[in-house]
Amino acid sequence: MKFKKLTFANREGEVLGGRLDLPLGDRPAAYALFAHCFTCTKESKAAAYISRALTAENIAVFRFDFTGLGESTGDFADTTFSSNVEDLVAAAEFLHNEYAGPQILIGHSLGGAAVLRAAAHISPARAVVTIGAPSDPGHVLRHIKDQQAEIEARGIAEVNIAGRPFRIKKQFLDDLEQNRMKGAVKGLNRALLVLHAPLDGTVGIENAGAIFSEARHPKSFISLDGADHLLSGQEDARYAGSLIAAWARKYIGHPETEKKDVEVTAKFTLKIAGSVTPLKDT
Image 1 (cartoon, rainbow, N blue to C red):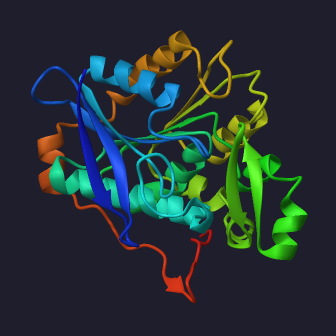
Image 2 (cartoon, rainbow, N blue to C red):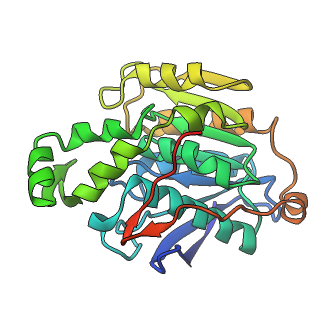
């Protein structure tokens, strides 16, 4: 596949690094926006393999690094779940302005929860896909439970996630406490595909059940039998990508038409006293 390395600014002025994977043809059938897993990057195996599968089906994929990760500037310690959602909206707006609005939103793990929350603010999106996503962003606290008391007491602590050190601030915990997914899923108003491995040891399959039961139709669930949480196996990730492409074709139109007819809704949360005010359930 062809690709372009791109950068764009989020609402805080941080420069985020992105990669646009393109089909070999000149006119993609649609554009997808991919949100990577917690503390991962756009270069994760799942992101790369799924992008390859989608471009093979003539769907372009824009993947980027959230603030403070990979090739993006900013301090990861200053980020929250809400700021990740804001990054997604900024990425969608950039893609809309430069190419065409993303008709497909794909999120892996915590990125899945983020696309569910961001979808209401990305008007071109017609289809949303979650892969191994938690039904509540607070699920991520399992990764930092040993340091949670220190974070609460000191305001910041270093935690080890997947063998790498990250600084987590209390604002991250507070933001998770205030964010709930129930209203976002119920009011999604987009076609939803839930992909989950039944033996996922990081985010249990019951999370997929909770998302699916809360969502309204049209919705679909597919079991990624034998896959791990990170979709680290190339065959598993490519299988997921081919399923997404086949399913999404029912809901996508031509991107040139979409670019003329719709605008990305960029209105989002307010900055109050230097912290992000998360979206509330409706």
